[in-house]
Structures are given as structure tokens and as C-alpha cells.
Length: 331
Image (tube, rainbow, N blue to C red):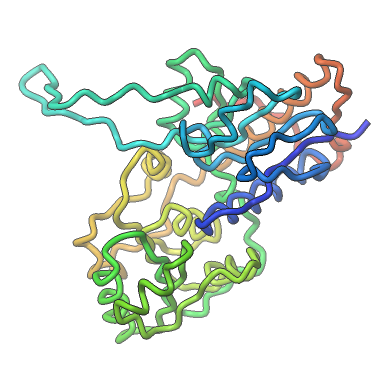
């Protein structure tokens, strides 16, 4: 009997979510059959009982309040698994070291774990912060990273342009920095959210600007053919790393970007934008992506075994289509 599972229908204002869905589906295809059906996670309607389980790709799906439908998982008549989720919040206050004591000026609120506890274990964690948080809460977790890092690098070229992957804030500063880069080499901007094109055009962006056209392969092709990627978005940096591009990441630092810390990618301040071309690098901890592949395989094997135990008759794809089993890496 084939593995039958629901997979979410991507519907979002953040184009990085489409990239994640695409990357997860590419990865799942190496281990299990295609989804039997899709679930519109934004509809507010729970999926039926026509599949054996529900597989959630990740994104910020462990953050309470981000996807209200997921807070109803306890009402589902089938198990739900999170493949690569994260708990999104500001980084904890590091405090000040005074002699042998660390003083903290504010207490960081305890994360709301009700969504994480609604999923069947083990849970795939996208970043080390979430993985450690789950482990401390007594919730079994595999550190799976982001499937975007495991995108195949077919069709990668270098057309010499700088891809300016637009961050959320400081629109005028980014527009000015891109204009400065364009005096030296071609610059193409790429939007990451609905409304980006209008915001940046209003700020004076006159360079080529790519928007979402409903085709994830077309969208990713701009990363594949760039010479350098300058980005203020996590899902501008991750596909660029997967394709071996030189990357300059600036701006946002929160629990999601703890993944970049593990990868050894420098998180630059906005003020460093003028030196982006000098400091862009394709050096990162590539060995970690091997651990992620192993942990994805281990997580899916556990899901299949769990479903077999529950009598749902799940099976993996034939052995020739899977990778050789290797020890799982939890940290």
C-alpha cells in the first residue's frame, strides 16, 4: 500500500515560503511517493480522513499564532508531523558579563509550545535554537535544517550580475546601495513579498526588478545565474548557498537566523552594505548539509515506522530510490 499523506497548498504573501514548499517536495520525492492530496492551511477547514497522515513542511509552523489552523491539530483523526519547523522570536538577551556573572536587563518570555506539542514526535527543527528549545522541553527533535539548502544545483551558471534580494526594511538605503553597485556591474533586484515592487519603485528603484510570477523554477533561476547575491532575507541567502554563490547577508537577526550562525555565514549590519562586494563569500559549513540530509532520511523513516505501528500500512518508496541508511545526527 502506498504512503498516503496530505501536504499543504502553498498560499502566502512571502515568496520564500513557495521556495521552501518546492524544496521540501523535491526532497520528499527521494524517499516517499507524491502526496495523495493537498490541504489549504489558510482555509480554516481541517483535512478529512482520506490520507494516512499530514506532513507539514516547516516554515514558522511551530510559532504559536502564525498558523491558527495548526492549533486545531488535536482535533484531527490522523497524525500530523512537522518536517522542518521553527519557533520565531527575537534572540534571547545575552546580558552583560561582569567578572564571573552574566546580568540580564530583561527576562525573555517563555515560548508558547502548544503548537509543537500538538505534532507527533519526532519533530524536524529548521534551526539550532528551535532544536535546543524542543529538546529542553522534552520533545524529541531532529535538526533537519532547511530543505532549501539541499536544492539540486542543476543549471547553475554565472551571468555576472549582482542579485539584490530585497529585505523588509530600510527600502531607501537598499535602493541607494543597489544604485551604487550598478555603477560597477549589472544589478537585478528580486522581490520577496507582495507589495515589494511598489515600495521599491516608489523609493526610486529604476533597475531591473523581478517579481513573483507563480513559477518557482523561474524565480530560483535568478539565483542560479547570479554572480553574487546581496540579501536581507534568509531565503535569499539559503538558495544562493545551495547554488554555490558568493553571498552577503545583512540585517535581520532573530531565532531563525541561528541557522546562519551554524553554517558560519556572517550576519552583517545594515551599515556594512557599501562593502557588500568585498565581504561576499561562498564559504560556509558544507559538512552540515550532509548531516541535514541524513536527519531528513531518519525523520522520514521514523514517520513511516510510526505509521506502520499504527496499522496504517505505510511504506517507503522502493529501496533503489532511497539513499543508503546512515546514522542519524541529532545535533
